[in-house]
Length: 129
Image (cartoon, rainbow, N blue to C red; front, side):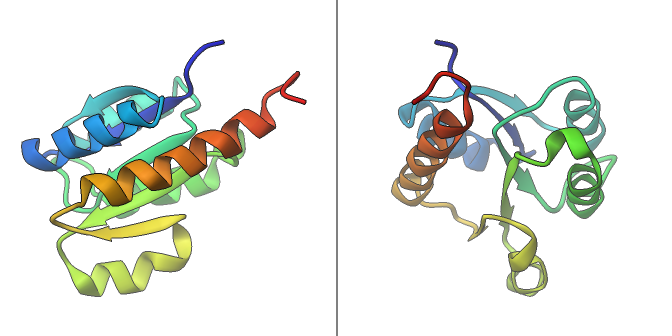
């Protein structure tokens, strides 16, 4: 069985590394993307189970990518985890994501959430019964 895909759209190296290691520990195949335009391009060609999305990205902002995900029917099952250092943005967008993380991100918190999301993704897969 293939591992579920997680996209980490994050320009901060430390945050990206924590996300990468947390999601890998939970059993995801991961890709790190450092700019908003490349993240948006990748979302147009794949259907990740999870997207960890920074709100302050170069070239295309996180909220624009979030709107794209929400407006794209084929991404309806994609779970978004918002990552931001701005508590105001976290409050404004918390209803639009499965989880909102304030930076610095905790490895343990993200890994545990990712394990739950992986179980959810596996329950949606054909033949998982």
